[in-house]
Amino acid sequence: MKLVFATNNLNKLKEVQQMLPNTIELLSLKDINCFDEIDETENTLEGNAKLKANYITQKYGYNCFADDTGLEVDILNGSPGVYSARYAGEPANSENNIKKLLSELNKRKERKGQFRTAICLNINNDQLLFDGICKGEILKKTQGKKGFGYDPIFRPKGYQKSFAEMNSKEKNKISHRGLAIEKLVTFLSNYNS
Image (tube, rainbow, N blue to C red; front, side, top):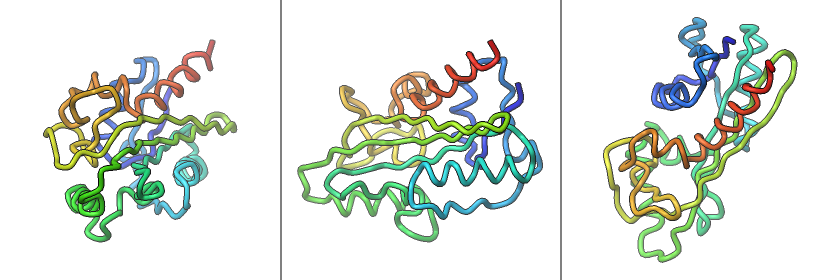
């Protein structure tokens, strides 16, 4: 089965490819000659995932899934949340986002939060939503060189290291995206049977 993952983020693409069974041929936006910038204008993760999946399905005609992920910090009322990728403004990059978040949490003892991923799958005129949540805490400084985004400052509950200190197999087993993709894979595995 051919399935488009509506993302330009090569890190995400690589992470997801490792989780899918080899019966699914994962196509990137580049593979379908989509170079459009799909603006994430919704105010929820689910809304942005739907927006991106619908854009690809309607414009290109492919079965497709899209995700949106946010880091939700309890003491900040769920921020940065849906704005995680652009939290520090332009230029949007992980280093600036991490600096801003650490600055906002400076001198705060309460550092609980969670990563949450919403996935929208458009397949043969059906639309389904899957989600994944990984609870943990925000570290006081970066730890590790692997991963991307906020991984160097997020330590999942029950672990002594950040996402950025884990190899991809270890991270995918417990991460928000890994859990959401697992639900997607389970659905797709039963879809053709």
